Image (cartoon, rainbow, N blue to C red; front, side):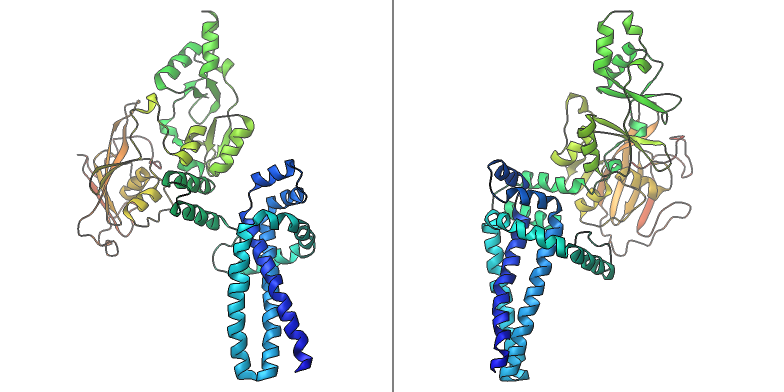
Length: 465
């Protein structure tokens, strides 16, 4: 019917417009800010506008997705009305569904997205003017729709919508490894950068019982001696107790004073120490690293929710989360995080995160009260773990190892982990000990020669890790 012909024309026009927004969506995700900065230096027209857009990339990706969906809906609705009016309801709906599905998949889904990835900069730079203008008009609407979508979706939603998340970038990294563009180590390092924002400072900290510190009334020569013996170039300075951290003394400052002469060697640590940086132990590592770079400080003291010192973290601890363990001559005595002693049997550092333990044995360990393997052993025992203590968790047997620390107290430093033969993870809930913190699926045994209620190994309360 001639009166419905304009609807067909509108549907045909909407298809390439939808494809344009689909290509632009892919181009925005693909472009690199570093390369766009280079194009700005080269004087490329439109590059400066694109640079202004990239800090809010997710918002503009959500906007292009919204515009594409609107155009697709208009095209589908118009074409459906046209086919129903000309060939009837039954066949008209069938033809509309088949044709719309094919066009949306090929002409909007595959083709434009491929072009958007192949010619990302050629498309994104000229379109940046359009995006900026449309963003002023429709930006509030897309943000409102994202809020509504997050409200009706179970679980925690995404502030900028699910359109440009790090999941897509992770998939690109995996695809690059599969095609040989990056090797396995490079892929692991890139993935670690993404994980940095999800890792809390307390997960990589040196806990307070393992901290090396010095009293404020000691001399520079004594501080230098401690630094040489411990292998640390920065040492926290305390007042009345280890919660009273006054500052940090640097080995370089101590050397300068002791080399100046015997009289200068009697300078107190309190006169040399520099201000300490305090951060919450729940702060993400990427923010900790950014703060260290901003204030040029390589050590931060972590404060727990009660205001006490939980431990410390150094820039080396943060970088190890990206590149792996960094060992020097002073780390020769530290156990490796994971060592396979025999097939299926592993020696784990007591500070290994429980997530890594779960990945090692392909089980999900859900414990919110502790972060480390050593803390897990103590949680199941319900008391301070001693060397020789044995527990079972989700079909995994954990045996604590260790000895005396520098203060003469018994501490666990590593844990032997193996699967329990013949134990089904789904039915390993038959044994539950009373009087402790054990839960379903946990089994406890104390094989250190002490009575089950003997706390003689340590006078301190149990700590994570």
